[in-house]
Length: 286
Ligand code: PMP
Image (cartoon, rainbow, N blue to C red; front, side, top):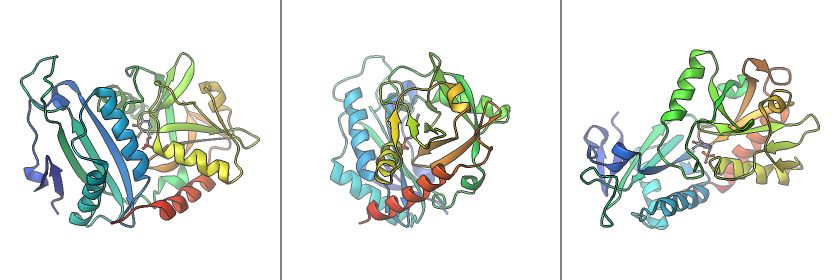
Protein backbone atom coordinates (compact mmCIF):
# COMPACT_ATOMS: atom_id res chain seq x y z
CA UNK A 1 0.00 0.00 0.00
CA UNK A 2 1.33 3.41 -0.96
CA UNK A 3 1.76 5.80 1.94
CA UNK A 4 0.53 9.37 1.90
CA UNK A 5 3.48 11.73 2.34
CA UNK A 6 3.45 15.42 3.26
CA UNK A 7 5.61 17.66 1.02
CA UNK A 8 5.53 21.44 1.32
CA UNK A 9 1.85 21.80 2.14
CA UNK A 10 0.57 18.96 -0.07
CA UNK A 11 -0.52 15.39 0.66
CA UNK A 12 0.82 13.15 -2.11
CA UNK A 13 1.23 9.44 -2.81
CA UNK A 14 4.75 8.32 -1.84
CA UNK A 15 5.74 7.66 -5.48
CA UNK A 16 4.94 11.30 -6.30
CA UNK A 17 6.71 12.78 -3.27
CA UNK A 18 9.69 14.71 -4.66
CA UNK A 19 12.07 17.47 -3.59
CA UNK A 20 14.54 19.41 -5.74
CA UNK A 21 18.12 18.21 -6.39
CA UNK A 22 19.05 21.80 -5.47
CA UNK A 23 17.62 21.36 -2.00
CA UNK A 24 20.25 22.36 0.57
CA UNK A 25 19.31 19.33 2.63
CA UNK A 26 20.55 17.19 -0.27
CA UNK A 27 23.58 19.32 -1.20
CA UNK A 28 24.83 20.45 2.22
CA UNK A 29 22.96 18.36 4.82
CA UNK A 30 21.52 21.79 5.69
CA UNK A 31 18.48 20.29 7.37
CA UNK A 32 17.15 19.06 10.67
CA UNK A 33 14.73 16.27 11.55
CA UNK A 34 12.62 14.66 14.25
CA UNK A 35 11.29 11.14 14.75
CA UNK A 36 8.23 10.78 16.96
CA UNK A 37 6.76 7.43 18.01
CA UNK A 38 3.07 6.60 17.60
CA UNK A 39 1.45 3.96 19.82
CA UNK A 40 -2.22 3.00 19.57
CA UNK A 41 -2.67 5.87 17.11
CA UNK A 42 -1.38 8.47 19.58
CA UNK A 43 1.79 10.62 19.63
CA UNK A 44 4.41 9.87 22.29
CA UNK A 45 6.45 12.68 23.89
CA UNK A 46 5.35 15.10 21.16
CA UNK A 47 5.92 18.21 23.32
CA UNK A 48 9.60 17.31 23.74
CA UNK A 49 10.09 16.58 20.03
CA UNK A 50 8.40 19.85 19.00
CA UNK A 51 10.54 21.82 21.48
CA UNK A 52 13.79 20.23 20.21
CA UNK A 53 12.72 20.88 16.61
CA UNK A 54 12.30 24.57 17.49
CA UNK A 55 15.77 24.61 19.11
CA UNK A 56 17.38 22.93 16.07
CA UNK A 57 15.71 25.41 13.68
CA UNK A 58 16.76 28.35 15.85
CA UNK A 59 20.37 27.07 16.02
CA UNK A 60 20.61 26.94 12.22
CA UNK A 61 18.60 30.13 11.63
CA UNK A 62 15.94 28.33 9.59
CA UNK A 63 12.57 30.00 9.98
CA UNK A 64 9.89 27.59 11.26
CA UNK A 65 7.72 26.75 8.22
CA UNK A 66 4.67 26.08 10.45
CA UNK A 67 3.57 26.95 13.99
CA UNK A 68 3.67 24.33 16.76
CA UNK A 69 -0.13 24.00 16.63
CA UNK A 70 -0.06 23.34 12.89
CA UNK A 71 2.81 20.90 13.39
CA UNK A 72 0.74 18.88 15.84
CA UNK A 73 -2.27 18.95 13.51
CA UNK A 74 -0.06 17.69 10.66
CA UNK A 75 1.14 14.83 12.87
CA UNK A 76 -2.47 13.86 13.69
CA UNK A 77 -3.40 14.18 10.01
CA UNK A 78 -0.57 11.95 8.77
CA UNK A 79 -1.60 9.30 11.34
CA UNK A 80 -5.19 9.51 10.07
CA UNK A 81 -4.33 9.47 6.35
CA UNK A 82 -2.04 6.44 6.75
CA UNK A 83 -4.22 4.69 9.33
CA UNK A 84 -1.08 4.39 11.46
CA UNK A 85 -1.64 2.50 14.70
CA UNK A 86 1.93 1.83 15.78
CA UNK A 87 5.07 3.26 14.21
CA UNK A 88 7.13 6.36 13.65
CA UNK A 89 6.62 9.75 12.07
CA UNK A 90 9.72 11.16 10.33
CA UNK A 91 9.79 14.93 9.83
CA UNK A 92 12.55 16.78 7.98
CA UNK A 93 12.93 20.50 7.39
CA UNK A 94 15.70 21.82 5.16
CA UNK A 95 16.68 25.42 4.54
CA UNK A 96 15.19 25.16 1.04
CA UNK A 97 16.27 24.93 -2.61
CA UNK A 98 18.22 27.43 -4.70
CA UNK A 99 21.26 27.37 -7.02
CA UNK A 100 24.21 25.78 -5.21
CA UNK A 101 26.30 28.22 -3.18
CA UNK A 102 27.83 27.95 0.30
CA UNK A 103 26.10 31.26 0.99
CA UNK A 104 22.31 31.12 1.08
CA UNK A 105 19.73 33.85 0.54
CA UNK A 106 17.61 35.22 3.34
CA UNK A 107 14.44 34.75 1.30
CA UNK A 108 14.70 30.94 1.06
CA UNK A 109 11.51 29.03 1.88
CA UNK A 110 12.20 25.89 3.95
CA UNK A 111 11.34 22.47 2.54
CA UNK A 112 9.18 20.34 4.85
CA UNK A 113 8.61 16.61 4.41
CA UNK A 114 6.82 14.08 6.64
CA UNK A 115 6.28 10.35 6.24
CA UNK A 116 5.21 7.43 8.41
CA UNK A 117 6.82 4.06 9.07
CA UNK A 118 4.55 1.36 10.46
CA UNK A 119 6.33 -0.68 13.12
CA UNK A 120 5.23 -2.45 16.27
CA UNK A 121 6.91 -0.04 18.68
CA UNK A 122 5.09 -1.67 21.61
CA UNK A 123 6.51 -5.16 21.05
CA UNK A 124 10.15 -5.22 19.98
CA UNK A 125 11.45 -8.83 19.96
CA UNK A 126 14.97 -7.57 20.75
CA UNK A 127 13.78 -6.24 24.13
CA UNK A 128 13.93 -9.84 25.33
CA UNK A 129 17.43 -10.59 23.99
CA UNK A 130 19.08 -7.16 24.21
CA UNK A 131 21.59 -5.94 21.62
CA UNK A 132 25.39 -5.74 21.41
CA UNK A 133 27.36 -2.58 20.64
CA UNK A 134 30.98 -1.85 19.65
CA UNK A 135 32.96 1.31 20.43
CA UNK A 136 34.24 3.59 17.62
CA UNK A 137 36.10 6.93 17.81
CA UNK A 138 33.71 9.91 17.94
CA UNK A 139 34.03 11.40 14.46
CA UNK A 140 30.83 13.42 14.14
CA UNK A 141 30.87 17.21 14.14
CA UNK A 142 30.96 19.19 17.37
CA UNK A 143 27.37 20.46 17.60
CA UNK A 144 25.58 17.18 18.13
CA UNK A 145 22.86 18.77 20.24
CA UNK A 146 21.35 20.06 16.97
CA UNK A 147 19.39 17.28 15.34
CA UNK A 148 20.86 17.72 11.85
CA UNK A 149 20.62 15.19 9.03
CA UNK A 150 24.44 15.05 8.87
CA UNK A 151 24.37 11.32 9.57
CA UNK A 152 27.06 10.01 7.22
CA UNK A 153 29.62 9.18 9.92
CA UNK A 154 26.94 7.55 12.08
CA UNK A 155 25.76 5.44 9.18
CA UNK A 156 29.35 4.38 8.31
CA UNK A 157 30.10 3.49 11.93
CA UNK A 158 26.97 1.36 12.25
CA UNK A 159 27.72 -0.44 8.95
CA UNK A 160 31.29 -1.12 10.12
CA UNK A 161 30.40 -2.57 13.51
CA UNK A 162 27.60 -4.66 12.01
CA UNK A 163 30.20 -6.25 9.72
CA UNK A 164 32.08 -7.18 12.91
CA UNK A 165 28.96 -8.69 14.49
CA UNK A 166 27.69 -5.90 16.81
CA UNK A 167 24.21 -4.41 16.50
CA UNK A 168 25.20 -0.76 16.96
CA UNK A 169 28.19 1.52 17.45
CA UNK A 170 28.96 3.49 20.59
CA UNK A 171 30.92 6.74 20.09
CA UNK A 172 33.93 7.43 22.32
CA UNK A 173 35.59 10.86 22.61
CA UNK A 174 38.56 11.76 24.84
CA UNK A 175 38.16 8.40 26.57
CA UNK A 176 34.47 8.88 27.43
CA UNK A 177 31.32 7.49 25.81
CA UNK A 178 29.16 10.15 24.15
CA UNK A 179 26.15 8.17 22.81
CA UNK A 180 25.05 5.61 20.20
CA UNK A 181 24.56 6.30 16.48
CA UNK A 182 20.85 7.10 16.96
CA UNK A 183 20.30 6.72 20.69
CA UNK A 184 21.49 7.78 24.12
CA UNK A 185 23.51 5.28 26.15
CA UNK A 186 23.12 4.61 29.88
CA UNK A 187 24.53 2.26 32.51
CA UNK A 188 23.28 0.98 35.86
CA UNK A 189 25.78 0.50 38.71
CA UNK A 190 25.86 -2.57 40.97
CA UNK A 191 24.01 -0.56 43.65
CA UNK A 192 21.21 0.25 41.22
CA UNK A 193 22.03 3.83 40.19
CA UNK A 194 21.27 4.97 36.65
CA UNK A 195 24.27 6.83 35.18
CA UNK A 196 23.93 8.87 32.01
CA UNK A 197 26.17 11.46 30.39
CA UNK A 198 25.26 15.08 31.22
CA UNK A 199 23.82 17.25 28.42
CA UNK A 200 26.26 19.30 26.33
CA UNK A 201 27.11 19.87 22.67
CA UNK A 202 28.74 16.40 22.68
CA UNK A 203 25.44 14.54 22.34
CA UNK A 204 21.86 14.83 21.19
CA UNK A 205 19.46 15.81 23.96
CA UNK A 206 17.26 12.74 23.70
CA UNK A 207 13.58 13.21 24.45
CA UNK A 208 13.31 9.59 25.62
CA UNK A 209 16.42 10.08 27.81
CA UNK A 210 14.76 13.03 29.51
CA UNK A 211 11.49 11.12 30.11
CA UNK A 212 13.42 8.10 31.45
CA UNK A 213 15.34 10.28 33.94
CA UNK A 214 12.04 11.70 35.27
CA UNK A 215 10.47 8.25 35.43
CA UNK A 216 13.51 6.78 37.27
CA UNK A 217 13.49 9.55 39.88
CA UNK A 218 9.73 9.21 40.45
CA UNK A 219 10.09 5.44 40.93
CA UNK A 220 12.93 5.45 43.43
CA UNK A 221 15.76 4.68 40.98
CA UNK A 222 18.56 7.16 41.76
CA UNK A 223 20.20 8.89 38.80
CA UNK A 224 23.50 10.65 38.20
CA UNK A 225 24.50 12.66 35.12
CA UNK A 226 28.22 12.35 34.44
CA UNK A 227 30.68 11.03 31.85
CA UNK A 228 31.95 7.45 32.02
CA UNK A 229 34.53 5.38 30.13
CA UNK A 230 34.02 2.25 28.03
CA UNK A 231 35.78 0.30 30.83
CA UNK A 232 33.28 1.51 33.43
CA UNK A 233 30.43 0.62 31.06
CA UNK A 234 31.85 -2.85 30.44
CA UNK A 235 31.94 -3.56 34.18
CA UNK A 236 28.49 -2.05 34.89
CA UNK A 237 25.62 -4.19 36.19
CA UNK A 238 23.41 -3.19 33.24
CA UNK A 239 23.50 -1.02 30.15
CA UNK A 240 20.76 0.19 27.83
CA UNK A 241 20.00 2.68 25.07
CA UNK A 242 17.00 4.96 24.62
CA UNK A 243 15.31 6.53 21.58
CA UNK A 244 11.85 7.23 20.21
CA UNK A 245 12.26 4.15 18.01
CA UNK A 246 13.33 1.51 20.57
CA UNK A 247 12.12 3.13 23.82
CA UNK A 248 14.46 1.31 26.29
CA UNK A 249 16.67 -1.36 24.69
CA UNK A 250 18.99 -3.49 26.87
CA UNK A 251 22.65 -3.64 25.78
CA UNK A 252 24.12 -7.02 26.68
CA UNK A 253 27.65 -6.70 25.24
CA UNK A 254 30.19 -3.98 24.45
CA UNK A 255 33.16 -4.80 22.18
CA UNK A 256 32.33 -8.48 22.65
CA UNK A 257 32.45 -8.25 26.46
CA UNK A 258 29.34 -9.32 28.37
CA UNK A 259 27.55 -6.77 30.55
CA UNK A 260 26.49 -8.35 33.87
CA UNK A 261 25.38 -11.89 33.08
CA UNK A 262 24.95 -11.05 29.39
CA UNK A 263 21.15 -10.83 29.64
CA UNK A 264 18.78 -7.83 29.75
CA UNK A 265 18.91 -6.50 33.33
CA UNK A 266 15.96 -5.95 35.72
CA UNK A 267 16.26 -2.15 35.94
CA UNK A 268 16.37 -1.75 32.15
CA UNK A 269 13.28 -3.95 31.85
CA UNK A 270 11.48 -2.10 34.64
CA UNK A 271 12.26 1.27 33.01
CA UNK A 272 10.93 -0.01 29.69
CA UNK A 273 7.61 -1.06 31.17
CA UNK A 274 7.37 2.23 33.12
CA UNK A 275 8.11 4.14 29.89
CA UNK A 276 5.37 2.28 28.05
CA UNK A 277 2.97 3.16 30.87
CA UNK A 278 4.15 6.82 30.69
CA UNK A 279 3.58 6.81 26.93
CA UNK A 280 0.04 5.55 27.39
CA UNK A 281 -0.65 8.13 30.11
CA UNK A 282 0.79 11.15 28.27
CA UNK A 283 0.33 10.34 24.57
CA UNK A 284 -1.61 12.80 22.43
CA UNK A 285 -4.34 12.16 19.90
CA UNK A 286 -6.69 14.44 18.00
N1 PMP B 1 21.21 10.43 19.99
C1 PMP B 1 21.20 10.46 18.64
C2 PMP B 1 22.47 10.72 17.90
C3 PMP B 1 19.99 10.22 17.95
O1 PMP B 1 19.98 10.26 16.60
C4 PMP B 1 18.82 9.93 18.69
C5 PMP B 1 17.53 9.57 18.01
N2 PMP B 1 17.02 10.55 17.21
C6 PMP B 1 18.88 9.93 20.10
C7 PMP B 1 20.10 10.19 20.71
C8 PMP B 1 17.65 9.65 20.95
O2 PMP B 1 16.78 10.76 20.90
P1 PMP B 1 15.19 10.57 21.11
O3 PMP B 1 15.02 9.90 22.43
O4 PMP B 1 14.67 11.96 21.10
O5 PMP B 1 14.69 9.72 19.96
